[in-house]
Every structure is written in structure tokens, then in C-alpha cells.
Image 1 (cartoon, rainbow, N blue to C red):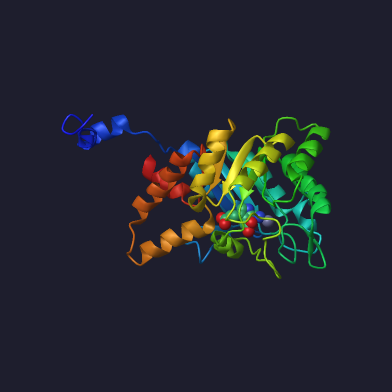
Image 2: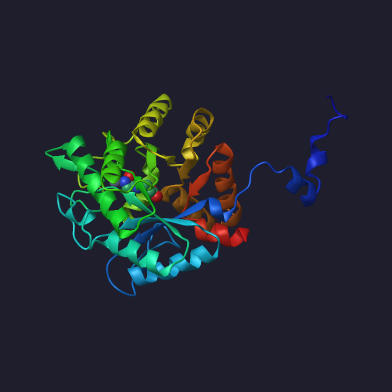
Length: 323
Ligand code: PBG
Ligand code: ZN
């Protein structure tokens, strides 16, 4: 219909009408809050490249978890900073390890909060790679057996959901099979099905103290130039027993989120990475951007692209703003 019969502005002229025709909504129950737990007591160290996010000891972590649950956030993703690292990532599957103790404490102290654990080796290996290393090779098959053990130890401690993030082939099947064999039939797996070798993960390596000592992650994480490959990764993970597919990073991969949304009926999650957070916070500190507005716009964009669930370091602030 030509102008003036059609005037797009008719539906924009008041907040009332804008709200009535709004297509996408952001609510706290769509957000997952990533958190870092470290040894000690009373520890709360701000991550310099991620202002507003902290490495916390278990007591502080529990406090923060309770507080964000109060804001309507239903789930957290836990990353651990262990007391010791070695070549074999021994501390990753220790029943008394940092994640295992943290999960136990949160499940004991905080009601109705989903505790999701990131399952990877990079925070626990002395070399900082997501898999076991022989020479300069990142070993696939030995790694997935170990990852399954890590996931099982998280579940034994009380984790509600596990999220393998290592990008080894076959790891979802390895985790799923060991959980089934061990009687844990009802633990959802959020697989980082599509995870790119992204520079937007930069600040995370400071936060988790997990920068690779040599080389980079390009032999296991995906080439950011590839989209069709994302479909293959997603299909594979579904076949292996994943319940929810995650894409990381989020903002640079909105097309990928949309492709998965249109192609698979599964719930889709997106991880707004540490660097996406850092960039917006940094620009706002220079008074170049309005942080509240760019934060909501970025999160809405990720939802509009097709993500059901958004993992974001802005979760606390966004939930506060939305309530
Ligand atoms: C661990 C892991 C990473 C992220 C999620 N799980 C880092 C990486 O793979 O280098 C990305 C998180 C972020 O940047 O916020 N493998
Ligand atoms: Zn890793």
C-alpha cells in the first residue's frame, strides 16, 4: 500500500503503541550469568579487563548467586580457577576441586538456581589448552575421555546442566555415555556446538587465567569465516546427545544464530563473550557510548537473531534494569 495509506510511523508514535507491537522481549529468565570461582575466603578480585566482574571465593560466590537469583536470573555458568594446574588437568575432575566445592555450596545455599558448569580443561592445564597435549599436538580422543570424567564429577557435586566448551570431536557423546552409564539420565547438555577461534575471548583468559602457553586454539575452535560448518557441528552434537546448542561469540555470529534457529527445533543459546562485554564497557568509560542502551540493544539483537537463552556478563545489570 503506498503512502499516505501506509505510514510506518503510526505504530511508533507513543511508548504505548511501541510496546504493543514489539516483536522481541528480553526478560531476566532468558539470561545466564557467567561467574568465576577461585580458592580462598572473602576473596573478590575485580577482573581488570571486565570491570564489574570478579574472581570470587566460594563464600562470595554464594552471596552473589543468591543476589542475582533475587533479580530473576535463573541460571549461572561456572568457571573455575583451581589452586594448582598440571599437564593432565588433574584438578578438573577432583571431587574436592574448586568447581565441585562451589557447586555443592551453591546448591546447598541458594534455592531454585540452575547451576551450569563449563566443562573444559584450559583452566586446569599448565599449558592452558582445552585438551591434553603431546608435543605440539592437542590430543582429541584422550581428551574426551577425561572431559567425560570432569562432567561426571560436576554432576556428582550437584550440577544441574553441563556445558562442554572444548571443541574436541566426540565430546558430547563421551559425556552423554558416561552420564547414562553412571545413572544420571536427566542432566541436560548445553554444548558449545558452534564455537569460533575468537579474539573476543581475550579478556576471559585473564579472568580464568587460561591463556595458552604456546600456539592458539585454531586446531579445535572454528574458523570465523565458516557458516556451513556450523550446521555440521550442530547436527553432530544433536546426534551425540546435546539438548541445547550454544553459539559463541554472539554479536559477531548473529547470522549463525539465525541459521541454527531456522534449521533446528532445539533451544538455542548464545554466549556474549568477555570481549564483547569489555568493548562496550570500555567505550562507555570514554563517554563514547551510553552503556545501558548499547547493552540492551546488543542483548535484544541476540534474542532477535533467534537465541532463546543469552549468557552474558551483563546479566546482573540487565536484570536490574529490566525489573
Ligand atoms: C573455555 C571457555 C572459553 C569461553 C567459554 N568457555 C574461553 C576459550 O575458549 O578461550 C569463552 C568465554 C568468554 O570469552 O567470555 N574453553
Ligand atoms: Zn577451554
